[in-house]
Amino acid sequence: MITLDLTLPDTRYPIHIGRHLLEQVELLLPHLPLPKVAIVSNETVAPLYLSRLQAALEAKGVQCLSVVLPDGEQHKDWATLNLIFDALLANRCERNTTLLALGGGVIGDMTGFAAACYQRGAPFIQIPTTLLAQVDSSVGGKTAINHPQGKNMVGAFYQPRAVVADMSLLDTLPDRELSAGLAEVIKYGLIGDAGFISWLENNMAALRARDSEALQYAVKRSCEMKAAIVGEDEKEHGVRALLNLGHTFGHAIETGQGYGSWLHGEAVAVGMMLATAASAELGWLARDEVERVRRLLVAAGLPTRAPRMPLSRWLELMSHDKKVSAGAIRYVLLKSLGQGVIHANLADTLLQKILDEND
Ligand SMILES: NC(=O)c1ccc[n+]([C@@H]2O[C@H](COP(=O)([O-])OP(=O)(O)OC[C@H]3O[C@@H](n4cnc5c(N)ncnc54)[C@H](O)[C@@H]3O)[C@@H](O)[C@H]2O)c1
Ligand SMILES: [Zn+2]
Image (cartoon, rainbow, N blue to C red; front, side, top):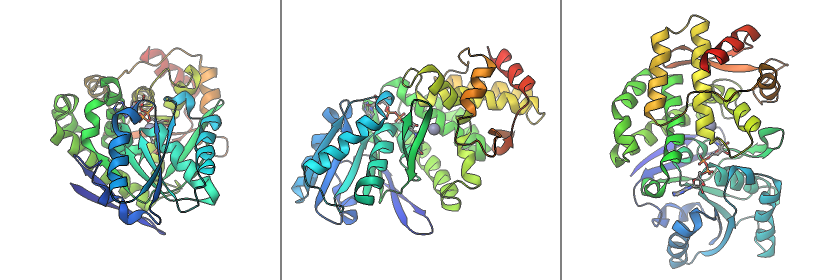
């Protein structure tokens, strides 16, 4: 097991990465103010892993309540969030009950937001079960639900007490979900580590074959980069925005096509492709570098072609994004492969050109 540390002005917490950690509840116990937890999971993950976690906790005298939500991005909403509060209140959970998020990014984001709100703040721990959640969403304290008009529009910055990423849980993850997680892994290389891009090119087959050493390295390198960036800029006043590479376009795809039809990672992959093409149009990347990014995404099993939407629709969707500042859409682009940069506004002609050429 490897343990990383995320240090913030008001708190710090461990990120444990390894195999067979689910039942190692000693990793959780020091973070529970009371021997009482509410495990939040969904209908897919609960039958696979909930009883093992619950039994291990109960063996240590921890009282467990479980809350099993419907599965899917389309349920990342108020009505489903409320089911968590209903269960906590029906079971007379006090503020010191710790919420455990056992699931992918949807469960992690909703449980974190529920913890931020419940009695003005209950402790919570992330136990991410998808690659995407292990490399990205479980770390850094962004929590939210969606609104019909925009992704993650209602939420809070609220940090977990610990993150436990158990690689063995990925054994049951569908291939398409594994690929979606690889999109966020590739993102870290593109924004900040050219050497990691080469490592990914050389190890993509091993990652897709779920070679545990390769996966563990990818999760570790991703969490190291995320922890460093969040440690520097918790509330996204500056450098943290680089983590949104591909997300301005990606969120437009997710919202525009209906939550759940594209996986988040797939939309981000296409978004990164568009950001890469825009960077080439601005003269920062060569054509063969754009093709290199495309090859890497394809090797990861990800789409690179955007769905057809009129430019006016893209602009409408992107102008709702949280990255909009003083009316300008802020894009994350690439100065070079391995160097992200924030860029306000792209000319309509340039956008139309990259969308046409991507088609
Ligand atoms: N908070 C952040 O910083 C942040 C960062 C990136 C993404 N996100 C959010 O994360 C969400 C996407 O997360 P995701 O890709 O994990 O999707 P997800 O949570 O929907 O999980 C994907 C699917 O895999 C299933 N699943 C989960 N673990 C499994 C396992 N071990 N075995 C078998 N099936 C399993 C889930 O039930 C679901 O059907 C989006 O809502 C996105 O906005 C948040
Ligand atoms: Zn993302």
